[in-house]
Image (cartoon, rainbow, N blue to C red; front, top):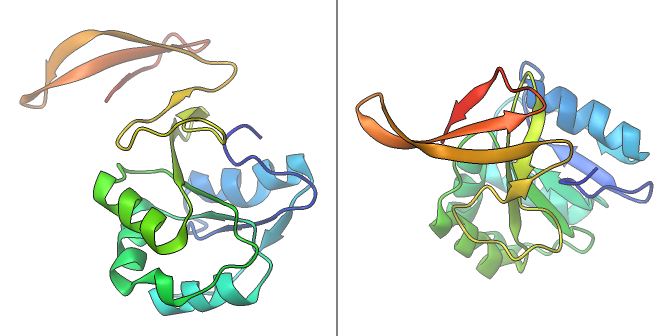
Length: 175
């Protein structure tokens, strides 16, 4: 509800494969809880031209795909398409490069709202609609989470920020 910003008037298209938790959260539970329509497209292989034509042809208002897919889309140059109903774009699952964010904005006029979550927690933090987006940032905590940076630790040969989020205090994440 907070990140995807869906209403009963929206049509949500999430390109996540059904084997990922993001598919359940972004294609079933999230949209249906908000009363939104879910758009389903049989696309065995990700093809930027098919995505561009689909977003142009159908009344999709909210679009979610992985950062890697957004990178493929901007390389295809999405400015050649018109998206008359698209108003909100979200991504997660891996880091979104600031360059891809900027190219998408230039080509479509739309921001990409990046979020972070885990299969066990759903969304933890995100760039929510209406927020000023800082490219490369995961945004702010989403209810009911209280995300706190606890310091910096060495992990896997590099220094990373160690964070803890509540109410599931037993889980820690490294950004």
